[in-house]
Length: 215
Image 1 (spheres, one colour):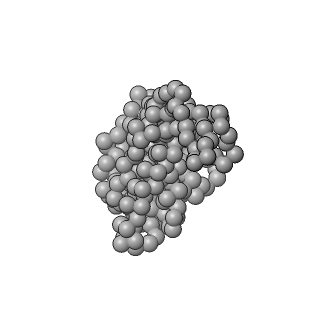
Image 2 (cartoon, rainbow, N blue to C red):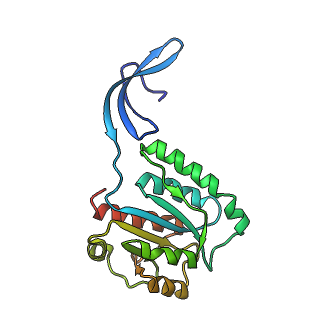
Image 3 (cartoon, rainbow, N blue to C red):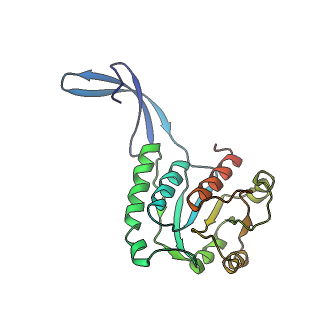
């Protein structure tokens, strides 16, 4: 903004997700902008994506929440599992922070809505939710290695809602994946390279958005 001059055009987003084209005007007592036209509100993705994220260490969850919001994820469900690190009290204290991060990210990217950020669940509670979605996918490093571009069309055919469950550092155990499969989930591979927990969910969401025509 410091490099902008009078007459330069900028885009302004309001809290309703509407975007306007405006022209800047520099004056002696400050800077103002006049609205020129409305560019319209951003539309939600064709597929409602819920990202269930195994709570990682430190501030990594802030990053996941921010970037998932920018991508258009409709809901973020933190969860704890066998290999989750950190205390329950510590995680509980961060929920409101994650919600603030989501609100700020929604405003920055021009979303008309703010994704819900749930209080952390355990793995059993998360598995109980999986049947409520058209598809539930569990990216797992030990899943059969099939290219997502080959399996996603069939997995997403007719789907309007998808849950993606990403394990924490250390991943998910065999027993946890078996429990998810029993609940209706499908393990999928994200390729030959093992991704960090804060990367894997964003890659999976991006692949689904691309396949559904939103990217």
